[in-house]
Length: 289
Image (cartoon, helix red, strand yellow):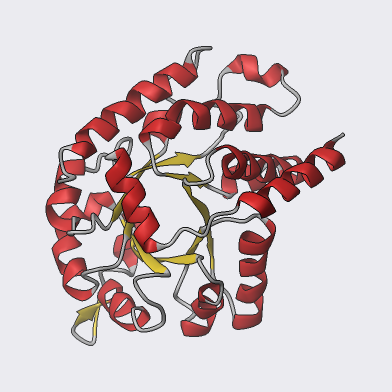
């Protein structure tokens, strides 16, 4: 049954896959009046207990969240670690989740939060896996091995590499803000990597907890889209992110994961997620002129 189902979804995806250009992404944002990205971080220990009776509780959890929040977001971001942690069954759940999004919400931007990055031939295989096999629109990439670890992800038409620049975690201070050769490392990463791709196939991760630094980020990459995690459970301010990072083309995808997907641990978790997503979308609408 599963083999047939996978084949069936694969045919559908090949027929319905939409290459998300920059112009199309901006149009989606302006049409829906939101630049919300919903992060899918399924944790068996946190999902509602009644789902554990399902054959695939991870997929069922994600499916409900996707259906509940799709009207209020323009992007979904499956965090691959939360699927890979469960081995083959988790990877199967991730494939089903991505296929479900692509089949039911083909105009939503789909980001594989995988943080890959290795020598060139290995990165090329990662790119094939996430772009050709899983049909993701974008993948997060670690740039610290240099250009040959990122460029393979930029060779696919209509696909995006989202490069880690200034992240929201506490440990970001260990390296990213270090001053070397009179410039913080994250600035050097932005300045150097911006020449590898274009505003049409490269974005950057900049954490909402570093919102005050977005002015400096924008001085280096004024027109690139930024994927901004850290609003919500991590305490980042949407107003500050917009104040310092918004552009005439919006230029932001603000991600929220835990604050939305774990808004409730009861059977009404989908409705609770929708309430939180709608709340964020309404706040975002105020910044879209």
